[in-house]
Length: 265
Ligand code: DGL
Image 1 (cartoon, rainbow, N blue to C red):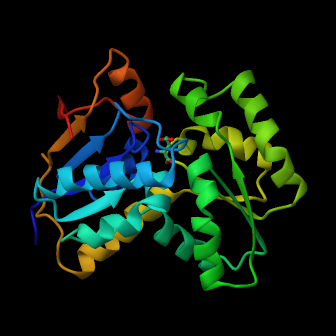
Image 2: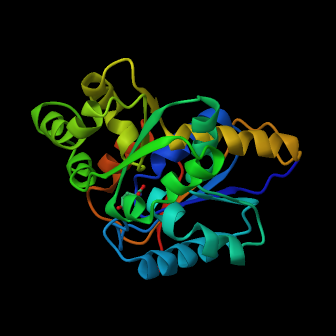
Image 3: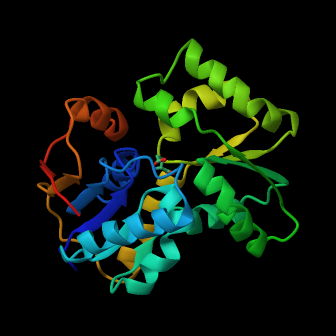
């Protein structure tokens, strides 16, 4: 047993989709979340900057004595995870490792990967999948307009459908059999993506895969928190705007409860 909290960080509030999955899988765990809302987005930035920001996020959580670190942000996972692992005294879970393991179990022919420019430009998903299965065909695609559209609440209807059509038409033509939603924001529009791609394309959500692998790890290592229906959630952000609650609750999928604090890194 280990009652220390799980630390989760993201470039902003999108990582709350990962918190949502962790809460479902591990309801008794205390969670400390850090959203770098003052510096979001990471997806448009250079590798050096994403590395630096990711390290600062990780150090903030490590000093709060978390028992493990979750990199919810796909861009940080792609560009900063190896640096974070170098300095972290606790295990680090990123979005890519459990997701590609899942892909490997599905014995697929052609997999699509969508994400930010940073994630796609790194080829981190492609390279990790190829390591497990050199023959698999991977098609990667950056979809930079999806993040701002979702943050503006465009999660169904004409605008998001037009963007999905614009970005995903080439993947549909390629007849992919699975699609990795390699960005914290995309689970919010899963229904619309499914609608466009059709039932035959399996959608793989890294948020679900992170939660499943974290839960397995904590159980195997006997690090689960004792049963506690009043598990604590603390949300730290680097900027707190008037839109915080609305956007946070959209990603979290429920009313936000727990404390919310603004911090500087
Ligand atoms: N959290 C980022 C990701 O999953 C999306 C938002 C951003 O660009 O910072 O890649």
